[in-house]
Length: 278
Image (cartoon, rainbow, N blue to C red):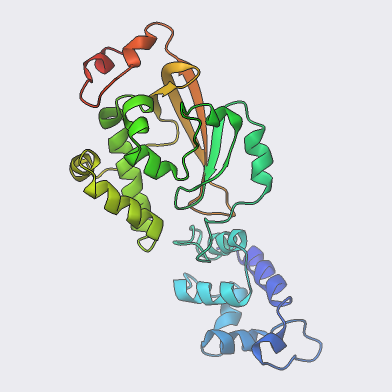
């Protein structure tokens, strides 16, 4: 526990909260809420909050940190910092239901300035930002609204773009999807994707028999057919904006297979013999 840093964070935020907003009287010469008022608002016994702010509360419970964070109107980044200072661990969930669904506008300039294919998804895999290099990937010129739905259920994706979909893509994508769904079981977008995947005549059986494993995504290499560049391998680089947990920046580094590019082309889901040769 970093007691000094924890105390500075909590005192600073507490001083900025008006007691009147909580129907409490302002104490003389005290900016913001008092420590005793924090106990009232969090429904804790006297001096519970004081122990937290002064670093005298080892291993504070999750619900206390959550209540304090909501009253002090912490940002998502401050929520992350609070947990690090108080417990030396990361928070188990985002502070707000909208966390992961809102991406700072500045990310658009960053993504659109990249030379590699790049896009940003929100926590439900809806595409929020993308650059022209990524748009060129799609032969139809139509950008998918949701990349998880596209990777699992779009016929062009399975048969023309994601080479060797059943062998090289589906196991990892499905594992990643299951992990996301376990973390956000109430996400209706993800639930709808799962429902449609299970009902699909091709995807459903693959989904059911896919192994339950920890998906490797960041740094993974997979075969892909680019509409302009042709078949090759992409290296996937993944990052998460701290202000938007479970959203992700995806950068794809495409390398054409110089020795045998045609060996990567898989015209059907069942034609995997040439993929092994690649």
